[in-house]
Length: 155
Image (cartoon, rainbow, N blue to C red; front, side, top):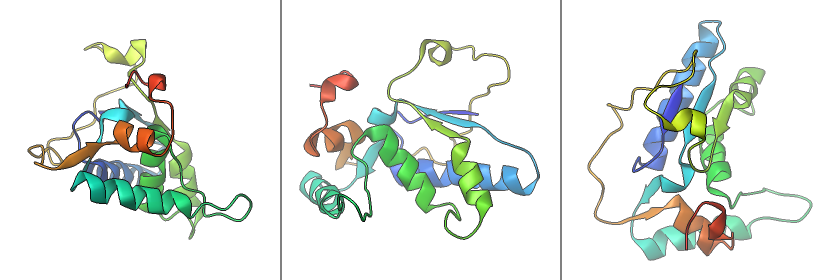
């Protein structure tokens, strides 16, 4: 299943993906999920508050002890989905997280209208909302945390 994160609210997208993965695990099948264009996902809220919240989370990092908080947009989405899975409690959450791939940009084989065999577009009709007035893209958050934005074509 393939989801495009462009202009999708991060929390809504992450909860949809987590729900799909958990329900697939409970039914006994393995569901591989790919999220593309991670840098274009949005976090709603005033820019200064969102950036200061992510900066505070990142400053919690300790070199050896953790908790480790990511800076890259793909890793931020993966960590957000992990927070919505039963990751600490049982192995089904960890197994589901192994089946998740998050990509910066759009690879050539997934960028066309036609997907490769065995892939299908994930339904996002329940999570699509109007773009909020105040929001920040994950690419901007990563740049604010010190990541080189040229990795995904940013400024």
